[in-house]
Amino acid sequence: MANADGRVIAVANMKGGVGKTTTVVMLAEGLAEAGHRVVVLDLDAQANASYCFAPDDQLKAILEQRRSVTSFLADRLLYGDRTPITDYLARDISHVMKAGEPLAIDMVVASPRLRLLEREIVLRLTEKNYGIRSLEGQSLKVLEEALVLLKARYDYVLFDCAPGISAFTEVAIRLADMVVVPTIPDYLSTLGFDAFRASVWENAHVTRSALPQPKRRPVVLASRVNGNKIQHRETLASLRNEAEEPDAVFEMFDLEVDNQASIERAMDPENFPYAPTFEQKWNRALGQVRDLVTETRRRLDG
Image (cartoon, rainbow, N blue to C red; front, side, top):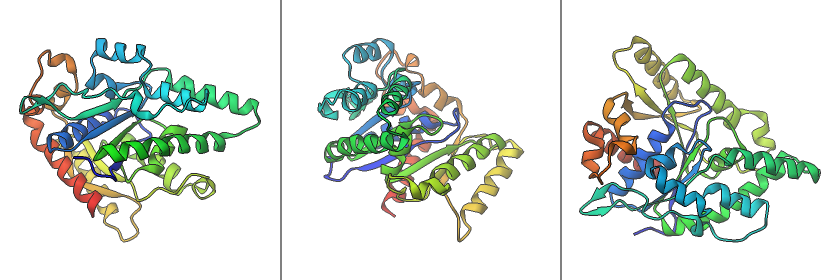
């Protein structure tokens, strides 16, 4: 049963292709398999997480009914509609089974119009002589109100954030109890993480922003790790050494998510025309999914 103060996790990184959506799906299904009520908000216009839970036909039907993050934000920010976030939920969206029942995962899906919506809002605010801080402030208010409802119903609220730093991503990061940053242990990915961390946690604008400060340091999750690559091993060692420094600006998961075929297969719903069990879907990656859930809960509580 959901408690009255669900935990909020944002999965984000400035760089794309580092395993953000994979991490969200692993967490959502792993937490639900452990008996928790979970809701996912897809803030990425690419809608990869939405597709992972809802194949094309189902996702198309949801979007035609105007039940998406884009519709919710547009209704609130552009049209003044006060319809609660719960009316936009796609309920029991998971097709993964446990004890004969689907996992308890609800979702507010994304649509490709999300990126256009942000531009439209900026344009309208500019016409009224408002700036980017007004967009951040309004977005903060809308998502804060949404989280009041969601945290009362769910144990965990997961944000799948878009690559880069949009106003919606930045607000999600500031409202999260923990920000998980999947990072491939190679040069480009760690460079992207450094830029991301500096932009959100260390840049001078952070202290000038009307948004609340992030609640804690980001937590790096090594993803798509190939233990046979010298570069991966050396980069991981360097990251862990840096995270253990007394003045470290980030934390790091003990878990390393392998680059394995079982995870790649689990991310494509077309591989499962039937409703698989949790064990069937994750196969050899089952242990890593459960380890991710265990460590995430421990870090949130600790």
